[in-house]
Length: 304
Image (tube, rainbow, N blue to C red; front, side, top):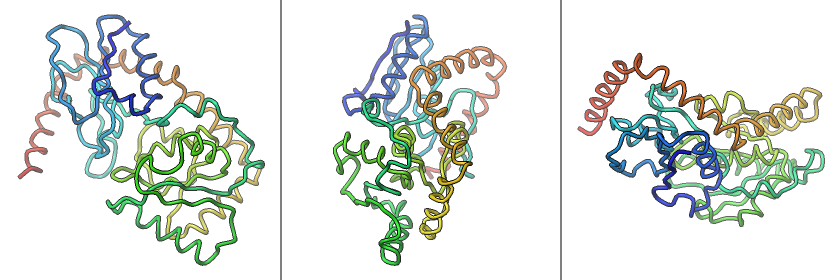
């Protein structure tokens, strides 16, 4: 088993899904590896040995090159909020691999998943409107909908003072399990949110306006629409849930939960990435060197 280090006690905060994945992943590796879970902005420790250091880099939402990318003693980085290029495409590198946030807690395991027909709410949202402005358009869309058609849908909308300052975690997950649709606007700094994955696990179909092009969204089930025409987006989405084609979406949702958001399956996928890194290590060495130099120059230029 690989050595597992939780560098900043990330999981005291409740991020149990990532800990479970890291633990299972470590069990799949032998002792020549070291798995380090760290907040991305933290410096990489020096260990002074020849182990293959694998980072699970969490929490920083800016989609930039992760801390540790330029370290020669880092073998591989599994990256939440993976780096994007200037066109908001996934920055493909030999050293990094996009990894889903998953749910922030593991209470989903204890909550019954009801059929959509038995759920009370057409849609729900409980969360903050951050000062960064990323949800301003979303808030205007909600306000417009509730002003023009307050009785058209059955909903629950609550705006909170910050991340984790709304409902108690179990109440929040139960609300998702009682919703047909879950509105999933961008986070404070990123298009990605825990809400997307929590909704999926609870069987509430996420409604988004945009997502980064990472592998785990390509396999997901969700509705996409603009917040400024929210009434139209919700009507079309709810009507679709009444059609025979809805069965395929729900089957896809279940498959996604059993694969991408399943601890064992995700850890196995990460194990395969380790094998791929070994097989490509020599052939990608020169490219990685050039890429590091190029990105260093870009970072230096941005700081001028």
